[in-house]
Image (cartoon, rainbow, N blue to C red; front, side):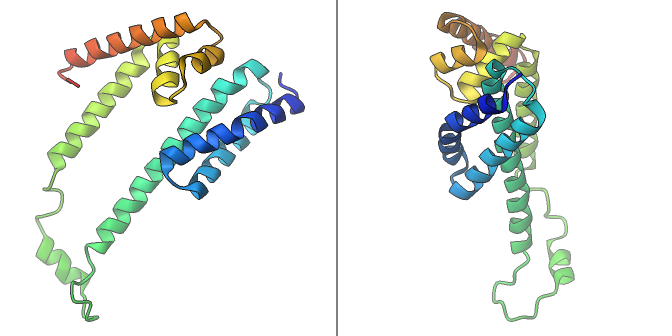
Amino acid sequence: MASDKELSDFLKGVEKRAFKRTVYAVRSDDAALDIVQDAMIRLAEKYADRPPAELPLLFQRILSNATMDWFRREKVRNSVLQSMSEFDPPDDDGDFDLLDTLAALEGTFGTEGADESVSRAQILHAIDAEVAALPARQREAFLLRYLEEFDVAETAAAMGCSEGSVKTHCSRAVHALAKALRTRGIHG
């Protein structure tokens, strides 16, 4: 179990790097600050009873999930705003009728790029499934190195293994994913 001081020291030690990495990901200081603070709060609330050695990996998973959640919310928010902006009249004379606009656009919704959207969603689902199917240590090394962008030494420290083991796990994961995705007809 991590003591309050160990948890506090861990959070102090990781906050700047987590903030910087999150800023790079979301391109917004305010959003990054919110994401990192939420991740820290979740770690403190739900995982304070874990040993100190588990905190780095747990925090990175929480931070990664919080960042992905932010992107999902932004995607929904932007698509809603984009969809609503399509209804703005071009001349903005104040004589806008949503029903007239919908009648004029009838039959055009969903026809542009739907096949690409479905294809992309299927590929992402396949990749998720193949990553989930990897052995635990390979999946952990792969996600830390390529999703969290840890270097080999940081990954080794987070996983509690040697740098050579990290390289082996990552290599095996990449080869297994490439083979599995080629089998599914997905080529990079």
